[in-house]
Image (cartoon, rainbow, N blue to C red):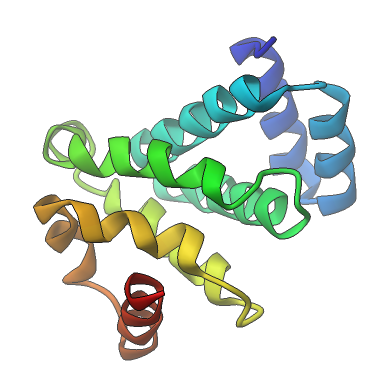
Length: 150
């Protein structure tokens, strides 16, 4: 089962050395089933939107690493991301810089020009997404269009 304390430890270790291999090993060591993965993804995304920019950037890198490695299936990100976007106005009241997490996540998703759909597709469901897309670069908007069209 998912443990917030254990997840915080894993993320803390990752933030110290940014070792992708160690993060993947720690994630696999948590032995999360599909429900645990969904809870962990929700935890990381909510944390990312509520953290300061430096911590948010590390969380974005961690999420992207786990998706790229296959530890987190792309479809396991859609619903938690959609939930975060649905409550975005409230989140931004508490943390006006919260959208920086999304920008960091989008940048990480596009780094290898791999499928960035997992980061962008949930935007299509919510009018609140304009709070995020207003700051995207031209490349980011192209990736968004491709993800939504897929």
